[in-house]
Length: 407
Image (cartoon, rainbow, N blue to C red):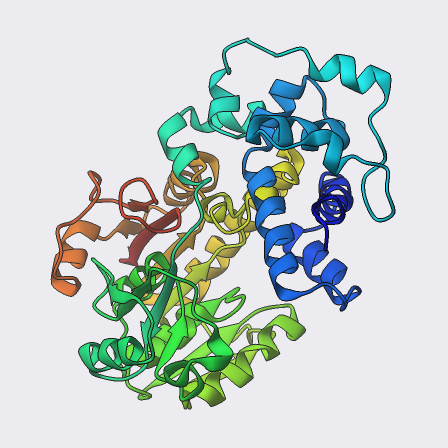
């Protein structure tokens, strides 16, 4: 493809993505699948450029003084020093030629200093909730790929992956984690195909470890989503015991089955409902539905689809699920509340409200729990709950609180 045609594809994609209606990865995949004639190098260029623009959307809109996607692309090209007239040539498959108004507009620079929310690449209303430029900027950087071992010997898997030509190293906290410095094509990875590794961010692995599950425990992973923590707990138990993996969305729940088969997991039972008589769980893992603000490294477009009404609805769900957990956890059992959110109103504020309503529940000292399970320095200041982030632990943004029901 000529360069103009590549950027025409970029223009079409950001025009659709910036409607903020659907996830960008799905839009990109559908676009490229419908155009099988686009070669692999062109696909990579288009994809990389689109993600670069998404990650710099706030600054580009600010510099362009416009949300119009054509002006955003022109601003991006101007900053890269590209030959804009050659790209916007008006030739077949290329963007239409510049108008006289656009040519005049391009001559003007916006010399204003970025406000903090623009510097943080975060919508202003969300920035006001966090007010931490460094944290938000860290969440705007691409994430390295983390894997969890599904065999006993991590060193053996690392050597096997290195022999396949992959650049990998142990994760700094999880004893089961492997970090890849470059993308691993899973279809060509023997260790993945043979079930020796599974995709899972280190923060999610840590959450599973801190559940402190034992084979004799009655365990449920509630709202388990893609089932990563269920699979990790099954590995920790070495296929012993019994884990109930629950999600009300049956299609998402059933997607765990092929992962179980590849990983040779047999101690997970999938459930799209929980019987009301089940009120004696030793471990009630609340994998709470949340804003996903801690996963923006992987989906930077998601911040533009989020709104306060969505968060308010999630808060009600989070409180309701915790109350369900209280009713179904036995005395002496533990409720583990986990989100991939960095927002206080989904984390500390939810826990405070839950504990106030249920005085017989108390937080477990999570620092001591960490030190009993993980051979690495505890990375947070609170002993009531744990926060992880790309800024402090080089992981997704996670919140974990372990609580015990005393009466």
